[in-house]
Length: 320
Image 1 (cartoon, rainbow, N blue to C red):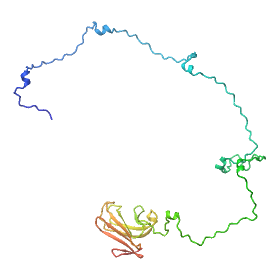
Image 2 (tube, rainbow, N blue to C red; image 1 turned 135 degrees about the vertical axis):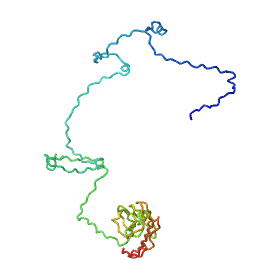
Image 3 (cartoon, rainbow, N blue to C red; image 1 turned 120 degrees about the vertical axis):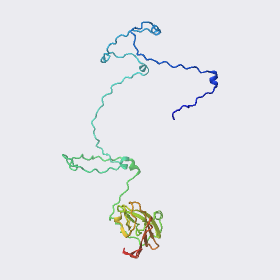
Image 4 (cartoon, rainbow, N blue to C red; image 1 turned 90 degrees about the vertical axis):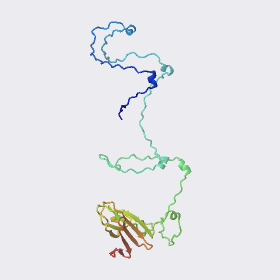
């Protein structure tokens, strides 16, 4: 807030007023500002700074000329500290290498090496190149007539065995399956339980974009009960079709239809607002009952599977 002085004047006496009486304040004179006029007289006296620090004349500087760098032709012949401790050694010129022509040996290597045992050579397919003859028609070097007669380490430890000629070829006996059935239990059977190929496929509801939402999986044994919450996909939608399918595919069009019924009387609302609870129930005999209930209005529809027919709550019957 801005400061506002009080209109009441202090008329009493303070300790400061007793010891320090107030003095009259003269009205200040009006200050007249005059324009500065420099003096024409030059200062020729001597100052203390001029006595101790006489001015020196400044000589004009010469223009800087960039000279090109010239290498000194003189060689450094003196001895440095590095030369004193680390004497240089003379490098004798190396003799020129002698290149001898390669001459392959006529003796052929027929033994077995470790590399050959570990890395078995594979056949390379023959490729025909333009302007060249195929490998089968090309000239090949003749094989060496010399035979390796020495004894290797492999021959010393692994003596060759005699191969007897078989007068008549061996005939494999025909396979006859045993008539005895294996009824015991193996370790594999205990750890990995086999599945029944005749098991009931999963049961679910068809959703938007050809989707299939599983509600009862194939491994679940009846009796069982499952519930899911669904909603509408369009604004103002008042009817919802509940399509019941069974199958192993994630696409609704690839599964087997079981039944379908409609849920009517849904109050108009924006898409995704209504909540419809769909309950799927299987009894002990595997018969199915599906109920759709609107959470907001409490209206519900039921679908029951009875033999080969579908029974609705309003009395209608539909062939499955």
